[in-house]
Length: 351
Ligand SMILES: NC(=O)c1ccc[n+]([C@@H]2O[C@H](COP(=O)([O-])OP(=O)(O)OC[C@H]3O[C@@H](n4cnc5c(N)ncnc54)[C@H](O)[C@@H]3O)[C@@H](O)[C@H]2O)c1
Image 1 (cartoon, rainbow, N blue to C red):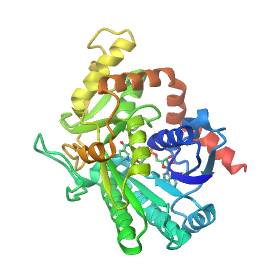
Image 2: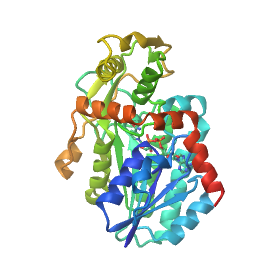
Image 3: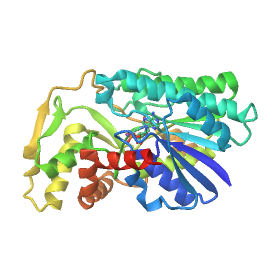
Image 4: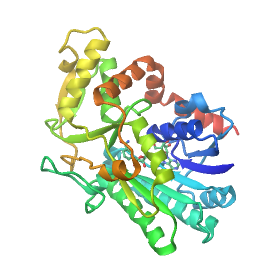
């Protein structure tokens, strides 16, 4: 049975990718490598944890000796790399942890794959999951990031992801490592840690806390339902061409303020409140340093060459997301308090 290593599989997007691969590809054995940082949580994979083709491995991609051993002995057919520090605000207060995980961690994985696959790369693939933020920001409506847009990262997070993208391409160019990269827009959906916009707002609404909107709420993001991203990763992993980059996006742009207002109206309905009640919690706060104005993805290459398209309309995806959080308040409480983290850290410390 072919083995696939997925890194960061206990996180938000990673957990959806692991579930998709475990469920839709019984021909593979999936190894989920994750350090279980504040953002990683095995509760996200409870439903598949006993699947016969699934194994969890706790470990840190920054630890080169550990990664060399794991990949050296693992005979992995493919590596799907999602492990990262992922929150822009945290990158502003602590850039070095982003350099370590996103840059050094990625190079450790590339080195280990190069050594383990020993110049016979037939049937192997290193898939690097990246972000549209590497392209910088857009101003003019009607302009989009394409795969040819020049990199212009503007936050420590996007600079670290851009750097890792460059390393991945350099390993293809220099050592012929078979690589593929995708750059995706903002994801939303179940299991999203409540520090990012949508789950933070849902969490605050449920707690009756203010809803902090940066600046005037004018920044624009393109939103994609996380399961559609997982499907795109599956399609690119299997059908994408080595050395290529694929942009993934929802063609679904929202100003932050409009998005928060839509979320407030959805919550009014779900919580049986009068329309307009929830939006009273909106508070405008000092803008994020260096806040990029607009991101928008042109995903034509992916749809024309590999036939992928988002399956879900935004209103439906947002409603599914809200329903998930309302039905999983315990999850929200346990990730916010760090209970899950402690529980799984203790479990692995005892082994
Ligand atoms: N969230 C988005 O909207 C978005 C959009 C495009 C691309 N991406 C990219 O997708 C990937 C996953 O993003 P996410 O939002 O799911 O992130 P996340 O923060 O929810 O999850 C990251 C996971 O990586 C693990 N991890 C962190 N450091 C590690 C280390 N040193 N060793 C091993 N594991 C480690 C964490 O424990 C966690 O499970 C990232 O590479 C991110 O850059 C995210």
